[in-house]
Image (tube, rainbow, N blue to C red; front, side, top):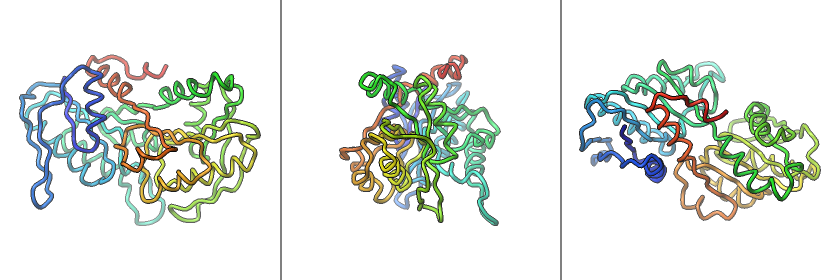
Length: 315
């Protein structure tokens, strides 16, 4: 087994390699003067089971091209099996046609990864479960809920006895994810934020479904981008009588002024994973905490290499 890394999130790749007690494969992933991606592998990978760790986060297209070219380089170097480990799968929000003459870009990216030569894909908290079906190769979707549940119980379980916790979905579409987390938190009660989105990037909170009065609210979602929806939902929960609001998000995209928006919001804390390399502003934010998922991904990689069960990680 060999672990190879692109440039999108080297700290995470190193942490995964450390968990597996393996060195990163010696390779160069660099740019020519005109910004073309060039990959050169400096050690023998013939007949090896190789895992490429590369999130397709900002700059999305550059990181996607790195993943594709790394895959092609390994295929031409006769690697036995190539697994694309994509902690954050970019273009996942374009998983359907929201209107006429629009693309399904998630399917296109799946085709590109498959055509490049990947034999398997490993990702974390895909935005939509059906994306697994976009690939014509085996796809494992890991869930961050067990890691989040352990962190929530360590921080809130003892002080609140678990009885005051309430899991909140920031929209109707995230209810399944919220219910799964609530089940892990000793069947904590569930609330839903009903919102109406007039246009992309803007949302208006309309109503809170569930009694949140006096509760320590834990909002759960897969992606925070601009942060507007989450911050509006946090304010609406406090207006409805919640004691405090903390958000646990799998992928901290945090584009534009998102970090400043979170810092000025009613959120007590925003907890994100390191599936995307945190920016300097994110690391310095007093309200944002980064939680590693390296052991989760590392254990999944070990199980894939050993041909053992990955799903039992979440039993």
